[in-house]
Image (cartoon, rainbow, N blue to C red; front, side, top):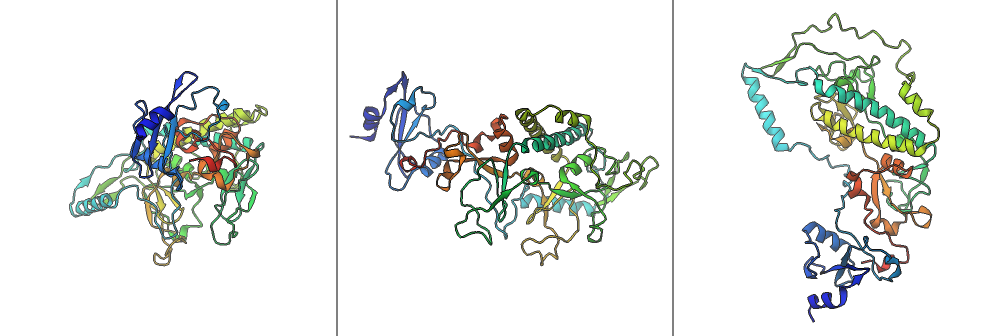
Length: 450
């Protein structure tokens, strides 16, 4: 009997008027048999099915369309069903201490741009610069800067209100975060000083674990000289996303910045500024709090009104999710024009066309660089680092996540998981990370899963 005959005679059946589709796939990812209505499997899906198999099995039966059936619990099936409609998004691999972050722009492209710049310096000709390279603002991005700043303030307020009714745990050794109670038992703590069982040592976390703040030096002149090592204690450090909004056109009296009315020219590779250093209408000392920048600013009327809405936790979670999406979308739009730099070995970030000169890098082989940072183009994850936590749609056994079933769990950013547990709807862009199409078996069913 061939595998095709076996599939048609013994595997295909009708349940509640629905015709099942079936395929038999070997360990070498070759299709042995399949029905006519079974979808075509790509290489990615075949590898996914292969990972879900066990070594002692010689074939895998993948059954589809189980979720659309009614009354499936009446049938005592031996195997669990897995959906292959959505591809699972692998989490970024944790880099070693000796590894550098991936380049946003290829090294060959950077070398090509450097050759063009050296050729331009040899020619005494003017290079046309466009905003924001010439010091002027991109007027179309000024509303985005205001929206991102307002969305960030709204996000912090909503997250603080939701945290009053939720619990966040943080590992004291490796810094892993878990949202919800009780904390998981997944043994992934593998750092110096961790337990031999690789179990986490949990403690109560807070806002800094859900939304970590990445700071950057505040630049008065965005295209001026970089901050030197001797000025590291004289220049204010503010959240990097706030500095990005300021450079994109947001005006905050506590952090003055220079707004040019005339562009800067590039002649033979040198930046020439014909504008006076401090114009008459530019008074950076006005409207600054004389008591310093450490006092907490008064909240706006909009944020105050949010505190008066009562104990609607789900409402705060929904508005916080909207603010999170708006902040990410606006920041990515601004970063397409305004440069952000990050160190290739540590988490240092500097908003601007170039990095600072402060020698405070303590990453891999920093002695060879005299503590200087290895600057490269930053990504959104460098500006707003996503803290991924474990996610399961339907909690079992009191919501405890165990180590033996971790391959069935999904992941989400910590702030998204916080709002999702409070009742907010998660966007479709996180569907590939949540893995909600994978059924989580019980402890006694896991050995039957293939």
